[in-house]
Amino acid sequence: QVGAPPGRLSGWMIAPVHFNGFAGLPTTKDLAVHSPEFSCFGHQWEVAMYPGGGGGVVDSEDGFVALWLVNKSAEAIGVHYKLVSKHPAGGQDIWGGSTSTMRQFSNMYSGNACFGHPNFARRSTLMNYLVDGTLIVEVHLRTNKPGQQSAPFVPENPFLRNAMLDFGDEETADVKFEVGGTVESAKGRRK
Image (cartoon, rainbow, N blue to C red; front, side, top):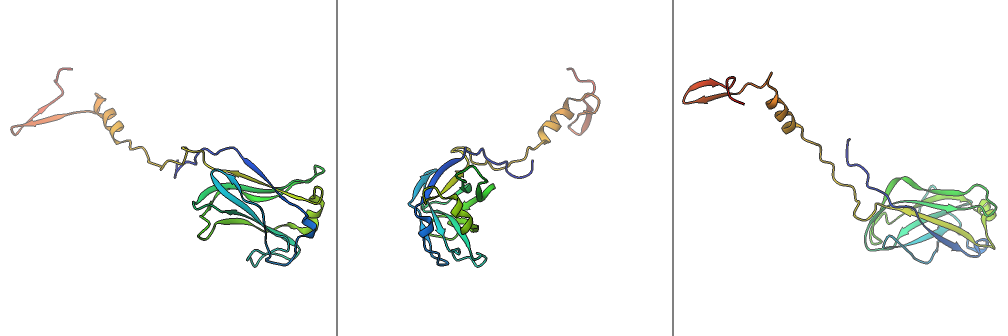
């Protein structure tokens, strides 16, 4: 193995966030609508939605909704996450996230407290995902299990095992003792 093996991950925790009256939300670029805070893995989270795109990111395209997951807690945490909008008629889900890479969300007082998608989906597409006028965004989170954080990688040192194997090999192990300036062989020793 090279590097630290990954820790065991928890199962996915799912928190549905409801943006009621989605069609009537303001579409001004960089204007956010914040979800109520919710708790997961002992941290407070919120989803910041920019119905008109943006969120302080220059590559947000016109006509797209931006979604950001925000750690509102005082401690940092590493998580895998997905933001999912399910089609109400069973069509294709829309999602974005980091399912293969653990993202380090810093605390709310420093940078990188949020990760997200400046171009989550076209607003016109999301209009087909409304349930009674509400856009439901499922927040999927998982992290290392408590007490299962990745252990530091310490490679095995084979020296002792190899020395003991060589010492016990009668064909190659020849021990000589020097006592008082004379050399005596150990070949005639009793076993």
